Structures are given as C-alpha cells and as structure tokens.
Image (cartoon, rainbow, N blue to C red; front, top):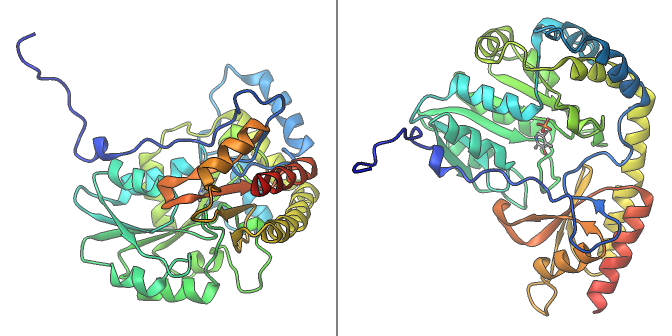
Length: 366
Ligand SMILES: *Cc1c(COP(=O)(O)O)cnc(C)c1O
C-alpha cells in the first residue's frame, strides 16, 4: 500500500491508558487469594443466586429495558422515587454515560490526584480535558477543586470514599463543594463503598441529589452485594439528568440475570449486614496488624487498605508484591494512582486476612 490513510480514533482516544484490572492469578502459587479488586469475601446473597437460576428460563427474551423490577427494589431499600433511578451495566458504564452526555470536545472534567482511574478514561473518551486536582493528606480538597473550576468545566467526579486511599469527605465538605460549584457543573458522587462506612459525618449523597439540580450519586452491586460479575450499577439523579442519560444509554444495558439478581440482593438486608459486620471487624484488625509490622496504612472507611512500604531497605511495594504473589496473596499495585511504593489490600475472608498478615510479617523480617 502506498498511502497510510485509515480510520483514526477521535482526539483523546489514543491518550487513554487502558484500565488494567486487578490480577487474579499468581504464577506458581498452589492456592490463590484474590485481594486485588475489593470484591466481597462473603460472595452474593443465596437469594440472588436462586433468582439467577429462575431467570435462565427466559434467556431468549430481551430484558425489560427500564429494569423496572430492579429500580423498584432499589427505591424501596433506600426510600427513593424509582423515577429518579437509572440502572447500568456496572457503575463504570454510568461514569462513561455521564461524560458522554455532558462533556463536549474541549470541555474540562475534574477529579483528584489519587482518584479512581475510570474518571480520566471517560473524560478523554468524551473528547474532554482531564483536570487533576491535588489532594491534601490523601483526601480530596474542596478548596483546591473549586479553585480548578473554569468556564469550560462541565463535570466533577468525586469518589466518596475514594479508591484506592479509602479516605472520605464528611457531608459538610461535600455540601460546601456543591455550594461552590457553578450551577451548570455536574457533581458526580461515586459512592461505590458507601455501605461500608461507619461514620456519623458521612452521607452517600441522597440528600444532596434530592435538594439540587446538579448532583448525581452512583452506586454499585459489585462491592457489598458481592455481584461484581453480574455488572450492576445505578444512579440516583434529578429527573432532567435521568431523561438525558436515558437517551444515550443502550436500550437493554442491564441484562435479565442482573435485574433479578440485583433485586433479590438488595432485599436481603441480613446478608448486607453480615458483610458490613465482617468488614468492620477485619478492617480494624488488618489496620492494627499492619501498623504493628511498622507499615504505614492510610486510615480507610472502605473494604480495602492502602499499605505504604518503606522508601529504602529493600522492602519496596514491588518486592512485597512478588513475595506475596509467590505465596498466593494477590494485592493491587497502585502505580497509576500515584503510589509507586504502596499496595492496596482488599479485606478478605478470615483465612486470607490472617494469611496475608503472616506472609507480610515474614516479608518484613526477610
Ligand atoms: C469498584 C468501584 C466502582 C464500581 O464499578 P462497577 O462498574 O460497578 O463494578 C465504581 N467506583 C469506584 C471508585 C470503585 O472502586
């Protein structure tokens, strides 16, 4: 061929570093504990599994494109109007839909220094410009975010609690952020870990969505509900946002098994409570044990911990990752999040938690 004319992706696409999911295997290890993607060690509610098995009788039929049953179950669990709920193929899909709906080429989208990587990807995919704001003490800084707003800002993504730090913004700070934003800037509160938070000054965002026109809250069934493989997310949003995103989304973006599984899972309050209690117990145990090993841990309210390794002495995060991997403990490296010398550890089963601490103790002594 003499010329090299070919279809070219639109500007921004080739600037995206494709998302790399947490590893699930460890070469050479006999047994593997996957502690790299913040999945639930308890797995899904047995009621969700039962609902999935019934749903397989109807696989030839398209699912309900409005996911009415799932929206109804979510609305009931949270005391919301189902008209203000929109479901998605994982909440990651929603983050993309919101960017596609509101960010024009050249517009700016804001997120913070150690914020979730999907925000950058979706802003770039929409043709927008990612604007990264410095954090203070590993926490989103409201004044810094407000200072970064320009006339081109269309969207602000805030994970609360944030992944991978596990830190959170109290409700007063989130309110201050909303109050300081121009009314035409959409504030996306990504509350993927909301159920785990045990703090009186935390709110996932329901009240703020209800009382304003420019806030949405996104949630997921991938974490506390143990249904990451089913891909179920949802948002609570003002009617005008629901209306706009409904035009952009795929008509059957939530599959029939997901609709049934999600509805059964959110009704099983006892299972959710069990997962919350398991996390509360082991998050604090892990935090304590890691500190005893001389490792600094960012205080987390989620179902994971960010572990910082010493800068020198041959005990780097990379060395730890290799050492733990060989013993079957798969953690998450967080280099693209601006943490070259830290690992993120998801709270696991009792066996995994005790095992990973024993392995880390061995590593620190080696
Ligand atoms: C895990 C996670 C999600 C959930 O993604 P799904 O697509 O619903 O599985 C969203 N936001 C953050 C910050 C997360 O860590």
